Image 1: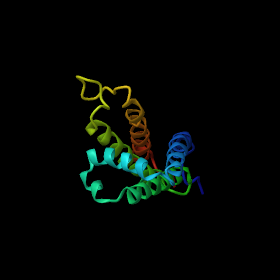
Image 2: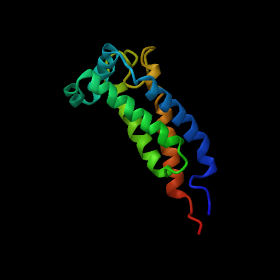
Image 3: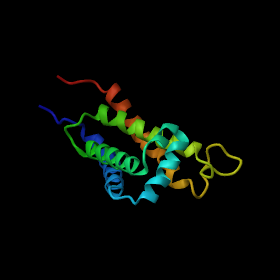
Image 4: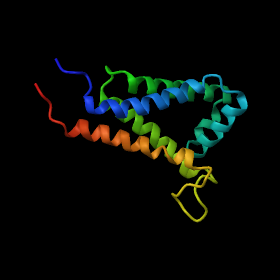
Length: 143
């Protein structure tokens, strides 16, 4: 019986998983004003987030990031599944980046401003997700 994940997936899953897990754990006790700030940015991309209280939004984002980070680190969770989760998560972050005023450089739709660089770097997570998913879809299954 082979490994549940391919050895070549371990570095990408470790890097993304540790980063996201740490981020989620760091948001567990967000003060209300911190949660409200994140919620406001999120609502630029997903207006329905305005319907949550800042405390509920803070719990949602902390739980989501913690669960995704843990799933990426857990070798028994299939790579195709964590790749889909990471792809959805990073796409949502990039949508927020593109829709939040001040995060892109003046006169540019995509190039980050100094304030936007921290979020624009999430394009790497989308690249990791795409690589993992493409490898899963194009690899031959062994009996």
